[in-house]
Image (cartoon, rainbow, N blue to C red):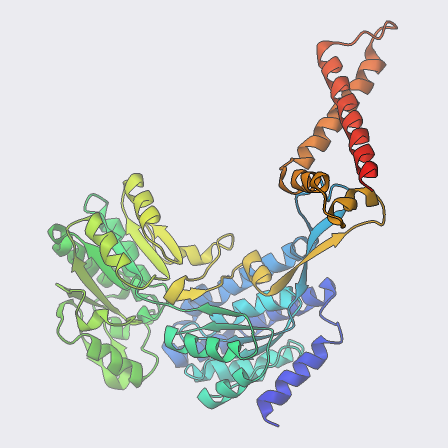
Length: 520
C-alpha cells in the first residue's frame, strides 16, 4: 500500500468519527491556521523569497494578508453559513418543513500552484475546514521551499490525520489522483486540469478547476490613459507576471499605442527603478525551464520596453512588445511572465470579436469612462470575471465568486462560495402524517377531477409568504379595530377589507379541505 493511499485512508477514517461536524471544532482548527500564519510569518516569507525572489512585504501583501481575511470571515460567518436555509413554500408544502442543510462532503484533495504557493493552496483549505471536511494538501513541487515549510510546520498546528500535507512530484500527484476523494480542488494550467478531471471522473468525483488563460485588456482611446497604464503596469508585473489573472495582452487602437508604451515605460521606472534586477520588490521567474519558455515566446516580436534578461538569475526585465498580431508566437499560450504584448484593433467592435474568437479567459479587463461601452463588453463576451478600470483587485472581494468558465476553469471560491463549493447542499422536506385528503390526487385511479387538482397544486404559483403576511396583517388589523373602536364597533374601510380577507381565506380553506375529502 502506497504512502498516498495510507494518508487518504487515515483522513477518511478520522472524518468518519464525526469530529469535524461540530462548528466549535472547525473554528478551533481555523484559529490554529491563523496562528500558524502569524507565528510562522518569517519562515513563510523566507521560503517564498527562495522560490520566487519575492520580498517579505510582498509576500505578506499578496500571500498571507488575504488568507488572514478569509479565515476571519469564515469564523465570523460560519454559524450563518452552516445553518439550515429555508426555501420558498408552495401550496403543497405550506404546512411542512422545507429547507437546505449544508453538510460536509468528506475528504477533499487540494492541489496547489507554485506562483502563489501559500494563497492558492491554503485559501481552499479554509473553505474545506469551514465546511467540515477532511483535506489532503498537495503543494506544488515547483515551489519546493514553500512545499517543505508547509510539510514540516503545518502539522504542528492542524490535526495531522484530518489535514495531512503530501509532498512530491508528478508521480506522487498521480498516485493521489488514483484514490477516491469526495472533491478535488486544483489550481494550475488547463493542460494539467484536463488530466485531473479525467482522473476524478473514474470515481465520479466533482472537481473545482482554477485555471488560467490569456486574459485580454482593452484600453478605450478616450479614457485616462495615464491612470489606465499605471494600473495595468502594476497588475501585469506583480510577481514577475506569474499571476493567473494578470493582463495577458493589451488591445487598443493604433493611434494610442505609442502613448500606452510611453506611459507603461514611465510606470516601470517609478515602480521598479531604472534597474529592476537589483530592486527587492521585483521577483524572479520560478525556474530555468520557465525562463527559456518565456524567452522563446518573444521570438518574432518587437521589443518596445525592457527585454533584458539573465538566465543564471532567472531574471527577465518588465517587457512590452509592440505590433503583435494574433498569430505571433507570444499569443499561442498563456504568457505567465513579465511580457506584455500590444495588439492594435480598429475599436471596441474588433476587440470584442478578437476576444470571442478565442477560449474564454479567466478575466476581461476594460479601461473606459463610457459606462455603456463597459456594459456592452459585459453583454457580448464571456469570462470568469470582468473588471473595469483596474486589475487584479476583484480577487480581494470575498463577496464575489472567483473562478473561470470553459477553458479557464469551473467552480468558484472565496468567502461563502468556498463553503458552498465544498459542501453538499442537502434538500430536506419534513412532512406530517396528516391531511391525507390532499394526497388523494396522486393515488390511483387517476380521474379527470384528480388531474385537475394536481394541475392546480403543481402549476399554480402562489406567494405563500405574502399570503401569510396578508392574513396576519388582516388578523391584527381586525383585533386592533375591536380594541380601539367605540362600543358601536363600526369598521373603517381598511378594517372591513382586512376582516373580509380573513373570512375569505378561511372560507376557501374549508372548501378546499371539503373537496379533498370528497375525492377519497
